[in-house]
Image 1 (tube, helix red, strand yellow):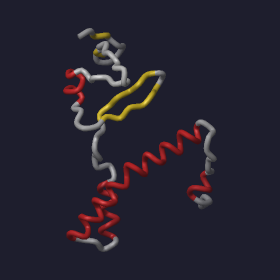
Image 2: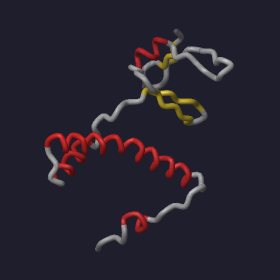
Image 3: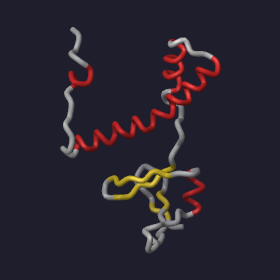
Image 4: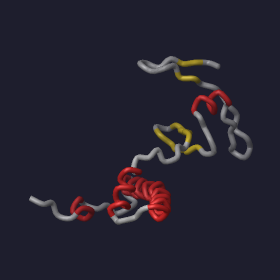
Length: 124
């Protein structure tokens, strides 16, 4: 497989692949295995290139905050576990909505809010 050296980084591995009539591609096994792709990838356009990367399930960025909040609400046992799972499932869709709104605002296709609209007036 051809490698292209990039300045200050590990060598970039490149491989030419075909696109089917249905616009489908096959990810080379070397890429698939080295990235640890499981069931899903996310795809987006950046700097005039298509980026495909593995979807990682929640890596626990908010777990501690969620648990602290639920415990402060007095939850414990199975009720705590059920509410934790429910709350955790809501994080990804909420973040995706925020990103969509930010993209629209950046493109001038959505109204933007001021700091005060979002957080209220600043305290002195």
